[in-house]
Image (cartoon, rainbow over all chains, first blue to last red):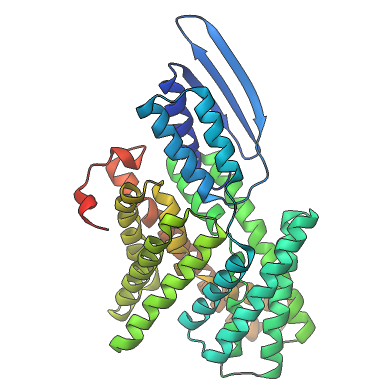
Length: 233
Length: 165
């Protein structure tokens, strides 16, 4: 469930599913674990469970799929086997092709560069820097490093490449490329989710997510700092 | 602003939104809408800023537009609204301000001269506050439809948005 949904959504979705099967549910949702108690007041049945959540990674296909499934459970009265099948299907739905991800995210960063006022050369630099940085990030994530360290590596790679253009004075405003080349790492989901959790009154989760976002931002700036010190910009 | 440059910005806002959408692994059926929403939100932000509004107001209005469209889009494409709205507002995230803030802080650790220190401090605090407030405006703008309608789920909001998108 922690693939990028906010706390209120997790709660409403689980409640919806539980109510569809005629149970009441109480939930404790935290960053790393989920506590769930199901009870049926008529028959005195209880079911309690504590479950660790998997490490965070944004996967909106999963969130969207689960949400759709919860509505189908309510409206079409799915049984447990169908639900299990759907969850397995959602788990096996592949991410996008790696090359597609790399090139589109790189294009997104080039667009950022353009929006901030960069020219063609800056855009190309931002594209290459992002491509390489994201590639490094995917590789270190596979190797199982600490997630913040992964972001540091990616940020360092990107800023080293784009910093080279600042160092060699390519293009009119190479600083734009340097500033935008790490933007693909910004913790958009943690920060926006943090804000919406805080607004919903889930203060604890909001703070936790906010701190998580800040640590990510800090890792990005550490990577930038490394490049700045190396090139002495 | 020239009209051509304005429309060019649309494309870049949309492209940035799609890039992040791919990174977050959104369902394929939502991508075109995300492109459109990113472009529209960005366009409103740019429009507000050319009309003299601050970047904070512009981001807020842009994010609010994205938030409202996302409710309609959620009905249309059967996904939770935030699947659309988060990738679409990310192009408006104040990356440049945050970057300058970081750079300023790094500079502050090094400089000793009082005059330079105060000047850098001014710029840094200004940039940092702008980044923070824009971020808050974005989050508030995106969740505005849910807050106004006081509903738990977008499915319960019955607005004639189905005509759109």
